[in-house]
Amino acid sequence: MFRPRFSCYCIFCAVLGLALVWMLFASPTVARAQGKGPISFVNDVAPILQKNCFACHDAKKKKGKLEMTTYENLRKGGGKDDPIVPGKSKDSLLIDLLRSTGADRMPPKDAGDALKKEQIDIVAKWIDEGAKLDAGLDAKADLVRELRVRWNPPQPFVSYKFPTLINAVLFTPDSKRLIVGGNHELTIWDAATGKLVRRVFTRAERALAMAYLPDGKLVVAGARHGQEGDVRIYNIDAGTPKDFGGAPAVDGVNDKAVLLKELVQVDDAIWALAISKDGKKVAAGGCDRIVRVIDVESGKIEHAIENHADWILGVAFTPDGKGIVTASRDKTAKLWDLGNKESLATFPDHQNTVNNVTITPDGKFGISAGEDGQIRQWQATDSAKAIGKQSKAMPGHGKAVFRLAHHADPKTPLLASCSADMTVRLWNPIAGTAVKTMPGFTDMVYAVAISPDGQLVVGGAANGDVRIFNTGTGAPVTNFNATPGYVAPPKK
Ligand code: HEC
Image 1: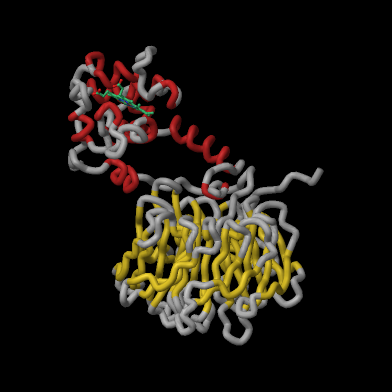
Image 2: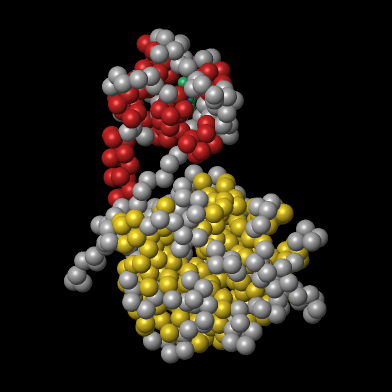
């Protein structure tokens, strides 16, 4: 099943929607349409086309034989040739179709509403001004890419009226603070008191996976869903903090002291992230189905493995760093030998989306979690010729298991899982036995982490709720809503 965390079902997106409407009306585009300065094709017209037309008029669909994701192809036109007569919007097919009240209106009636008058006016004015391409922009340039490069992230809200969905949580190396993926920011909390101690603004709208490098730098995989995905390295303690609603905030978008490096930038979300034991390599995978293994120092992509038929949702390095395990929406987990570039095993038993994967410290067992509500341990060495065969099942959650956190200490191995059943659970990953169940959540738990000292486990839920527990006793340590300024309504 396609689980809801991918789509914007949450109430929070209603807020984003409002913010977008506000941005549109406050934007220079509308000002220009009202007569202030010339219209820019790439900044003013292309965003309208991307939002309303590209779905049917891209290189794949080419409805009416018209492809408009480059200026050149837009001007080539479809079956009826160039839809634009420069200088004459009234004679241009494009404008006719946008203004039409008949069956030929674009976008077609069954696909959505007509464009707003202000939007049509922008396109018409651009045509009347000569339908020019912006200086410096190639007529063959992919407009999707150009728009992505030009896009600037909004600043997070000082204080939120609705809770922010959590996709990723991570303790700092000293186990004292908790990093939570927010809305265009990472929020950092004191793990003992639940106090917000810092905010780090990010380009990515959501942090989807996080991990620490041995040198104390934070690696974050993120996304603006359907638009872009990235893997970036931060120093969250650097920068010049300014007061932002009572908490210090630093700029992880532009401040080079905070945002240290970008390892990957792609067209859609990066869901999975892992760091090799020696800290030298990062593996990342996501919607483009490619797992990239990157050398942290040089930034060079050493491997780009395309072996899954659907999104990559989990990745981990084998202890010797020579292989990786992956989890995918194609319903399998795989073990991959990086040296020989071959898949050593495919584990099919989840028979549904595999949401996450890890491997035991001895490299003997892969452990995967899935939409089937199961955590499954399987052979990852071929000594017994049983590679890829299930060795243990860890039932209990009953509903989709989203993430695993592995405290890969050979002496006290501990595995934590989080689920749609609104619990976090602890397991012995070697014996495959249940250790503890931590309840108290009131929504699906999408994110889980164990502190580096092994003392704490945390779950982060779809409704912003963060609950930290003691791993030894299972007792709650602290809980708070990780949405700055948000006050939950009183319980009925
Ligand atoms: C849901 C799909 C869909 C969307 C969205 C859509 N179109 Fe179309 N478009 C079509 C189809 C189908 C045709 C062919 C219609 C025909 O030949 O009768 C077409 C034809 C056209 C043509 C004529 C091409 C030619 O040379 O014959 C133009 C121009 C056009 N669309 C512009 C737009 C613009 C501008 C938008 C966005 C505001 C848009 N379309 C959005 C499906 C779509």
